[in-house]
Amino acid sequence: MFSLTLMILITFILTNIVMILASLLSKKSILDREKCSPYECGFDPKGSARLPFSLRFFLIAVIFLIFDVEITLLLPIASILNIVNIFSWLMTSTLFLVILLIGLYYEWYQGALEWSE
Image (cartoon, rainbow, N blue to C red; front, side, top):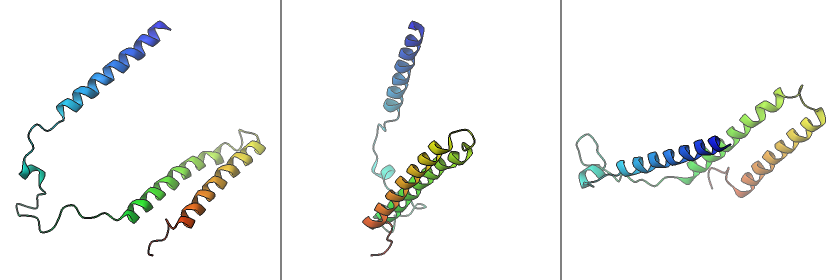
């Protein structure tokens, strides 16, 4: 038990030392205006490099990512049908799908899925 605690402590200390060293070494020491400006083949940029980002694209991407992860959680449900009790399998999968549908309905109700207003 003592050796396991000692190994965990050594690992924790070692990872903290590596993270501190990495953050200290990765800091830029000299901030140059030319290095911080956008570069377009040697010419001055025509427009601003900081264009406003549409939050609709970000929201749709996050919703896609959430449902993509939920689909990966649904895939093993079909493969364990022969292993577990049918009643517990049915209740668990039904509850999971109901939670997904409630989330989808809430996003639809809030207008997150409406592309144009």
